[in-house]
Length: 51
Image 1 (cartoon, rainbow, N blue to C red):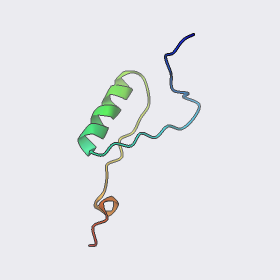
Image 2 (tube, rainbow, N blue to C red):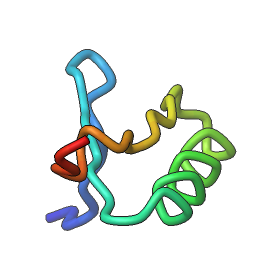
Image 3 (cartoon, rainbow, N blue to C red):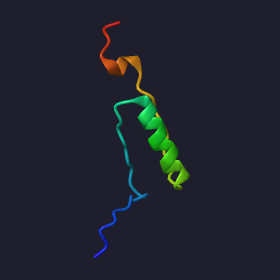
Image 4 (spheres, rainbow, N blue to C red):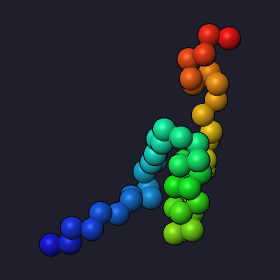
């Protein structure tokens, strides 16, 4: 039995990270491994800031 899990590239995958720097690193590593991920930075509106 192969316990190694792989991504199904025929489906959409979203990875959520708490920090932009972590998200950028994850994106870079996945793209280096041949995946096609896009980094979408967290915006101030995502933070719940009232202004």
